[in-house]
Amino acid sequence: MSAPQAPYAQPPQDKPMSKLITGAIWIAIGSLIAAAIVCVVWVLVGDQNGLVGKAFTTVLLLAAFAGVVLLDANLAPRRPDWFALASMVSWVIALLVGAVKIWLDVTPSWAGDDYRYLEYGASGVERFFQLLFVIVVLQLALLHLRLFWRAAERHVTAFTRGVAIATTAFVVALALLLVFFLTFPDSFDYADLYWRIVVALAILAAVGTTLLPLLNALFAPKKPRERPITAAPQVHAGGYAAPAPQGWPTYYDGVTPLPVLPDGSPDWNAYYTGYPTAQPPLPPRPPLPPVPPVV
Image (cartoon, rainbow, N blue to C red; front, side, top):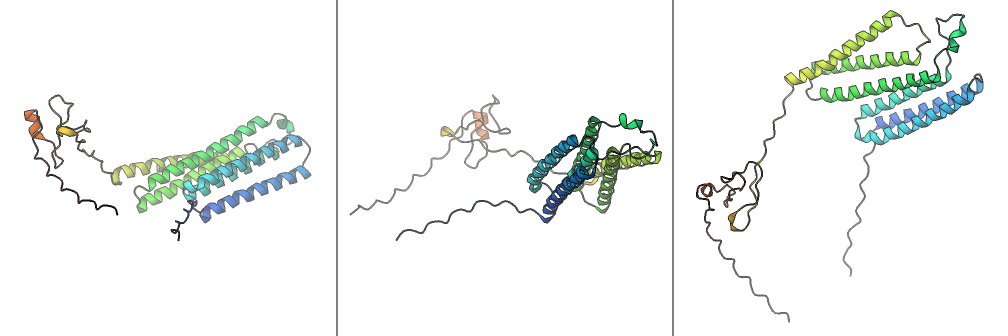
């Protein structure tokens, strides 16, 4: 009868995605489908001015968005759930802004009946850089929140939690105002109050960003310094040791380590005499029992 075989080892299974990350991926898929449907409607009912170029650019935009969503989905298990969701939402916003930049031709509200502006309006290159600035603003806001909340978790109190939430709200509001302006730079007449609010939010976000590290420096518990552990060198024949790690005592030359006593301590007597201390010989081993002959 053969011996029982060990069961096959099961391959390690990936960690299942949380419901929040799964919902973020479905949001990205729905946004991709919705953007494609809206672009198709614009193709059917819109004017024919630059239709081929807009359609080709839309295909590139949707392909880039799909690639970014796949990359975010692969990185999601290594990130916090809230950051994965926020990253996916930021790319959805970038997709919508890109679709607006491609298809929406809006006459400036301040142009009136003078349409000469359209001949010198925002070109494709300018719209591309505006979309690029939108992506930069969103990614900088995400990077700020990731580092900020990592610092906020060092020392959690009611006050620091309130500062973190308020600063997050200021950063998100500031990013949305900048994104709205970059999306519709010529569609609205931005009053002076708009930019006053932007500057005020930037100041409040900067104060909250610098306030939390200062609070951590004052009240957060300090991590104790790890002292290096001095280990005994390996003992060779004759009682001498191999080159010892840093901190082990040596002879006068400062290079040769002292011998090691049986209890693991340095042989300080050898430091003065120059010779290792004689150790008592080890007791002889007991003889092994005789092996019975094989019949």
